[in-house]
Image: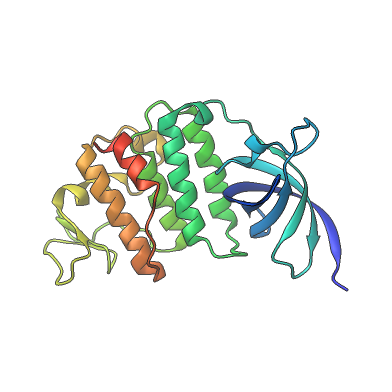
Length: 244
């Protein structure tokens, strides 16, 4: 008989999947147990789990019955660990959050553990919630997720590179023979962003076309490095808000 233990977990909601009336399957990236799936029964009662708690990238605390070797756990209670002040009410920030959640839902494997990535994401959501200048947040956050996946761009070994090779993850002066690279303006933006904390990255100047091309390039690099073939529905909204 499988063991059952009651646990209190801190997590970040990555994806919500409708299942039955008042029941949802919620994928949560937890601090100590990695990516987990929970069955959540929604309630209109203030003492039950309310629908607004189960929004993508919400920071939550979960009380759950954990079954050993089970792929689906049961959430007894789920509440906001830190209520967000601006993201739920700001369409631009909401677009950022939906994109980040989709990026993670399509790249995080089940039961994937990465405590430094969890800490970064938890802090990044709070930074976005508190920020006024957010036009570079999706680029900076994508680069930081890439850092935690293990293929963050390193500072160039050559002077004045004009191309960023997405396949080889290197800065160059000449174009590679393959089509996976960023041109001069986009390469300069990547160079500006790498190794910057958010306090500096948020004020880097760039036009909408360069931002769009850099984001598309970084997602192409994610596909190449992780050997994936995924696309992102949230990009349409994101491009309309920040790149047109």
